[in-house]
Image (cartoon, rainbow, N blue to C red):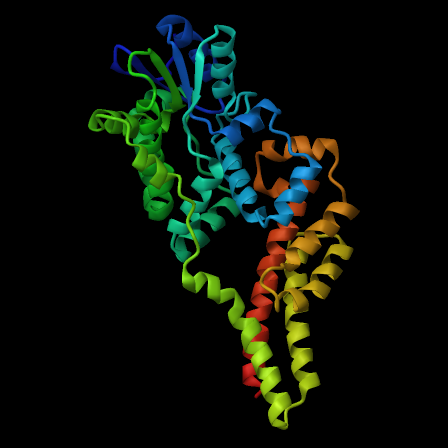
Amino acid sequence: MSSSPVIDISPNLRLLGTAHVAKASVEAVKFHIEEFKPDVVAVELCKSRFDSLVSDRRLDKEGLLKVIKEGKAPLVLIQSMLATEQRKLGLDEGEQPGAELLAAVEVAKDKELEVELIDRDIQVTLRRAWKKMKLREKFRILYSLLGDDEEENPELEELLSNQDLLSSMMEELREFSPGAGVVLIDERDSYLAEKILSIDSDKKVLAVVGAGHLKGLETNLKEKKNFDQNNIQLLEEVPKKGRISKIFPWLIPALVMGLMIYFLTTGEGVDIVELFTVWTLANAVFAAIGCILARGHVLAILTAALASPITSLNPTLAAGWFAGYVQLKVAEPTTEDLQNFLKLDRFGLFWSNRAGKVLLVTALTNLGSMAGAWVAAAGLIGGI
């Protein structure tokens, strides 16, 4: 029927590998549901990604505001950048990423078959990947996402039919970022296998997954004998901040306030006005630069500059939240912006899409504010 790879683990379990942006994969899903006649269709989706696909991958203004308030702008940006990279493979034939998975769900429901969502929540995966990555890996992956990669991409038929090519691409990711590779490849292969094993073994299952996961998934299914609930729970754990991570944001506020109290109580010959000026200017300038890099509205830039000296003294607040909110209000995303944000095929378009710009303003302002606080602290210590 198609070049989409298929692995029969047992008479009751078939794995179908797909490319998430290809019409051929959508057709392959429909064909194998008809041909294999499963009782259960398991798809490589989590609840949040499924809801996104069902709603035509739209982002609404309330959702955008929630992302700002909950400090999730960086995570949403990374998720969107990864989706953009998927489209840059040159495999986009008019289908949005995950279209074949949604087709699997729709066909299964039409035939009154059971549907199982077997992927780990995307936010958990991103948080675990970010936690596992070393600092140099984070800079490398962000640099690669921001850059324009002119490398020639494989054709769809070659990608789906050539398992060695798929394995090679997976290994390249692991070499590029070992930490991300563990989470995005090894952990997800293990998680997908566990979720498949949790389905009644007497039922016939067609599992629809990205072709890149086939090899690892096959290995896991053959090695694992039974469903392991403890393993699932471990893989679903969201990394908690360590003691140092919790204390770190308060170091600068404690240092600044400590210096101020010391000078006021001891009567040292230090110009308090000058210290406040150094703190305010450093925070304001760096936060404003971050907002400017995001190409924020002038009012958002002004908000970033005014908020940063205050929010840097209170780690429960962030200058980017205020700048992002102002950006959202003064340059409100249109319905088209919101619909198209998760369909952008080049990262450069994030700046021209108003929804993307809101997220960039939030994230880059926070980054600038953080840098400004450290520069200000260094200036205060140096001026003593």
